Picture 1 (tube, rainbow, N blue to C red):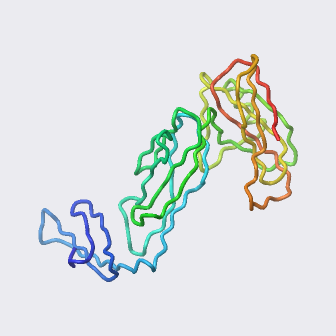
Picture 2: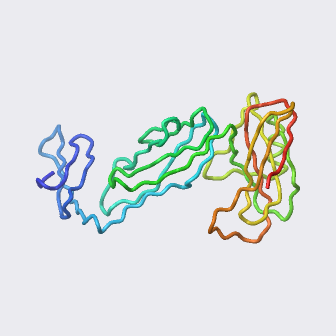
Picture 3: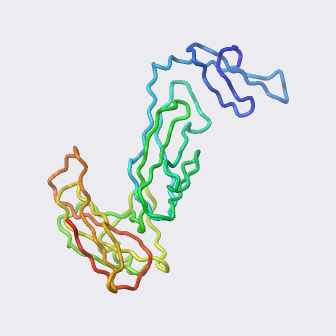
Length: 260
């Protein structure tokens, strides 16, 4: 730093921390091998109240399978003329038994037990600016496949225990994966897939698993239409949502039941 009160900078990495006082300051860089060769950068520091920091996450809720890994991401804005070597956010899991997360990268591993947990991300440059994600850890994994709007589709439930059956299902139901998440990979040596298709009640309709349990020599699968959050306006168009979940393979006969 050229000015004594111009902030602080790491001499090796170049990580710069602006001072509390707004003003114009200068950062100088000099070559170690040629001391006479250098450059100076002018830094304009604005008043803190002239900038409103933001931090958001793509979705406030996420469902994962026990032990599943997921890389979280966050969107941030930056003050004018401020650059960072890395995104200045730090991740943490609020519950002691809620899984593991890398504080800098956001790489998360769900715990081995089912439950609801919470991941927090906070800005390092503006402490107190944070966001939270609710993570529902389940014994099953919701697969990233969906079907577009269609005029009609049958209500149907299938149990898929092989890669060939899975491909036939994808083709028959005209399923596609979201561009924001990778296509699902299922190991049918260990897992199987439950596929449910039904007519929804509105344009917001989606399905969710309510319960899976083995009982009386059968695997009982209860599902329902996901409740619509308060304040959400839905179109009257009829949709035909599908739900596909991967869970540990079982040779028991499967009985599906819809709950209200």
